[in-house]
Length: 364
Image (cartoon, rainbow, N blue to C red; front, side, top):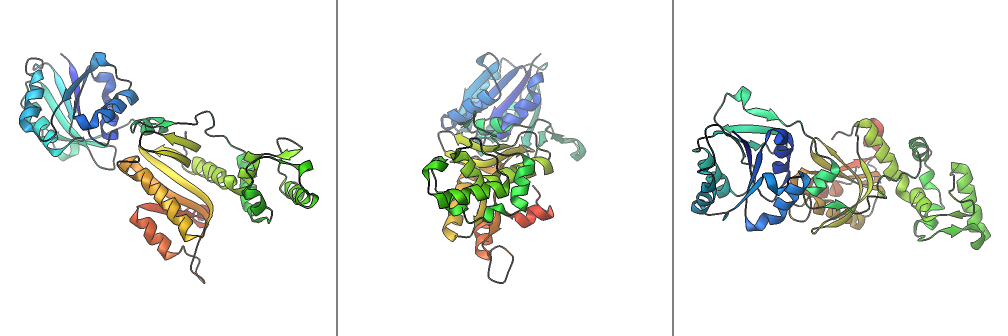
């Protein structure tokens, strides 16, 4: 008597990973039906799920050949008995692979339950055997972490030692925002600085401006004789990322949001401002203090759309947001420029400004 879980591997790996994580404690053997084109996806699934070869069976098939699929699956003709139980996840792969798998396992002597993951949900819907509508759905209780979500696409965090570095505490950053210190005239002079500023090596007027800003904002320096690069990054825009980070963490009761995360795999190499997983969807926020220029806006939208891309990014499970203190608006109007809105909607990207945060109207 043994329990098996059959997974059809496709381009999207999370629909395979979630049932494995949900049922792994009760499964003796994991069966993967895959093609030459998804070998990497199979490897990622096994890595995220910590599966080893001792309890895994891999069945390679031709994606559009029913005879071949049936022939390869016939491996189980002499293996399965009426004492065994087989769970079949029909979510991945091609239609022909799904049809072939369904056809084969519907005829084996073992007790077979087949299901698929409903798109955009955490619900497994049973399709075989047919049951009453009130009994066909099973909620997935497992929730992946950010690392597991990225790993399902073969990605890793490239700057793990620097992730979640917070320059200032929540209260100070909130004060920086509320007092509008980001509008100080000295900030443009600091924005393009690429290295530490030593006070005894700059002209007196520039030094006076910096010292005045430090005093007015009660900005505590790490070193008394200089303004270091990461402090300048905070002053000139990093404060907004940190403000949003604290806001999301508190408002949505997040356990593991990330700020300043570097993501790298064979498909992409990106720096993401704020990232977290909620209900098994990856939320990505690009944080900018202001977005007034059309060309800058297009760059941000392109970056986020690439992250959502099925081939180069992280697929349909990504919710992408561009969040700013102020968007460009039409003269005489407080709303976001309609051309910005239309462009963002075309790529399924949500625009969020300070008004949404102040009113508490942002919903995930």
